[in-house]
Length: 288
Image (cartoon, rainbow, N blue to C red; front, side, top):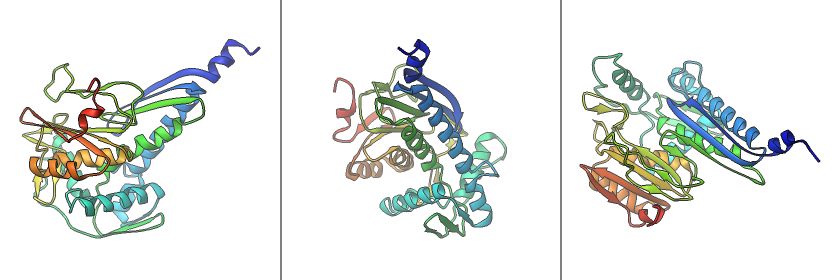
């Protein structure tokens, strides 16, 4: 018989918590070699953050925005998906606003006196892992969801199950999860029980003078239009992340229409204290 230590190494409950993407990531795995899987998930997340963080001058995204070209498979994947969502949302999801994102974050940090006054246009091309652009790109609406997806993949294995949460973005939960209230109280908006990916967006976490990190370049407006948006998506966390950001930026009627028409997506939009849900959102809610 093996020792108790060897049994614990092979069958266990591993978990960790760390800072990533300007939020707290939580990883948990149960089953065979759970601790090793959690370590691999954290390593994957931290490696990707180093490549995708536009606020790190050494990252691949910063290189692209500085030089107009980069060869990086992860950046290429994000750009392809961003171009897809740009087309499907008629420009509401726009990756061409890297300068705007930088200036907006500087304003929110208090490092500048005013938010960006204008938006940009430009072109971007992808060929295998090579990306070229004549405008700075904002991939933050995809990056955190992508990192959750890749970290979740690192947890996968025979006889093991796991869960990754990065702020409001998460892989399919292994149990009920609460949707945080945007009103600063401890009562959750809903308790989700779903096997889809989850993302929540809104301006309540960081704002200054009524402006937050959400923007809509089609109407050249800054700030989330709703208190909170929660999306559950069948495809992956990157899709949940992108659509939560998009819906948060759109006027209520347009957000509701886009969410209703998007296959494999359900949404809860909290606007002026009123809950607006897609037709089957409640099927992802506990005891619905």
